[in-house]
Length: 505
Image (cartoon, rainbow, N blue to C red):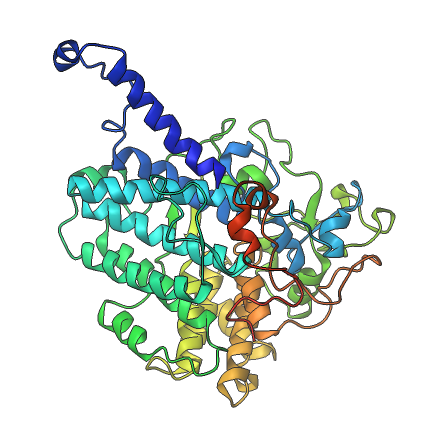
């Protein structure tokens, strides 16, 4: 947690220098408006930076790492079969063997806590200034990130994470208790958005442009995702939370993708994050020369004659070519003979950076209906989710193509969805997995651990792999053992293949 406390310390020291470097009567009449103080760093200044960073780290790493930097979620892209290294580079033995260590997720952990600290500051300052909208938006986006951290690490510092006045070594909270508290925070955020939105927030809202209705739907979608994640927990009852979602406007629908864009342009460190990592540099050079399509997802898309393949990837002389994850470089295709990323993923350096896609929300809703949690027809909801994916990815004549796909593809035809809620949930999850190709590997990684629905073939072929299954979680980072050792050691010995997150069956 050291990085977070440094931020607070810098602000505190800046304020201290101002207050001790001048006489009081001088300060009263000549405050320097260009000097950074805790008073002039407002919630409206903090929120846009945090929101942009939230979108960036979800799939494309932190902008602080620079354009083209390796994404902190690259391991998930590879593990679930979306991406793979090509034959031009040495194999990453740590990632492909699943023999992860305490340094494996250090950057991921610290970067997210840094962003969460900014959201916390925006919330506190927003409420103090009476801007409930900026506070609510910060609560909603932070809830999404808190869930993602819990899904990767389990118990984590939460309630004391930013109580820097009381402790620099925050205790770890129970993961399930964090999930419950996130539901309450989202309820509060929805209540705040029931009030008039301040003009100051509308000017800095680079996510939803001050649209309270979209913010409420995003909050409801995150609430539903928290519930869906717990579907396999014995005795779990989502009814009270589902009732709140239904009564407060429901989840994001068709055409309601939530994304962030502060004004991305084709310039160094100003491109849209995913494009900067997987597209092209401002001079037209490929951004990542080491990563291409995984042959696992290529085989799924080609076998099913899925027209989205041309939107997710580029062809090589008329064919789509992937690489086998974990294989020897000498057995792999070089980068120039492997499929790179297509226009649905890297359409423009100025493209919006997605935070929650419309189709992912609809797939969550379809599973909730299939499980009997929400009213409606599961097949209809599922078909709508698939169709929305075709629209979102830019398939020509998407409705016709989607109907053809749903009718003629056995893995997509609802007639093969099964009779039980669990069978239908796995059926839906597989199509959500395909729709999320390259877009949300964290969701696919969580779904696989929750439902174990993927067909064989995605596991690394590295002969030094330590397991034939994906790790169930990540290890706590080395930085925690260095700076917060008393508390992280209380969590005991963590084994990535046997120490489960509370929602894992």
